[in-house]
Image 1 (tube, rainbow, N blue to C red):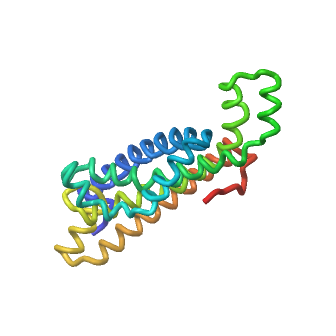
Image 2: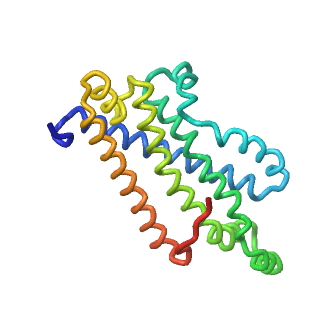
Image 3: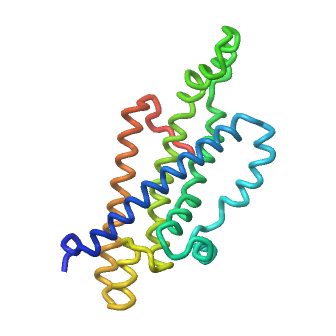
Length: 212
């Protein structure tokens, strides 16, 4: 038996990848918007950081029963949990990236009466961009882990995690479980390599820079 030739595995892989794309997109949007708001405002930092530090350590798999009760056993459950798990690296990197912004450049921009929008696009974003993209790269792997784990533990949702669960629990085929785990690991490595390549291409000045 080969995974590649199994249509059930193929449909599960497509479901997992599509869910991953949606989850990473949602986490990126939430993390960047909230990170820019909190990082640029001391008042919001004072209010928001305690909440962030409380929610960030919560394991997404522990929220599976709550998510099932709200969304049911469907794709929405794994996507919501993956978004929850993947938002934090992007959010934290965006917040702390503001410390890397050159204060002198901002002061010069203000002296020349540069608009706040131009300050954001010309000074702030180039400075925080490498940190944000690093957060997205980390979150990409976290989202994949959360998706597969939810599929495996929750059941009912189509995906490679559920495929491994069925063959492991019902069929006792640990070789299939190991094969699926290997495929998920290779997929994660490929995603990480792709983001590294994009970072080197789009932000060559950020080589070697990492937060978190």
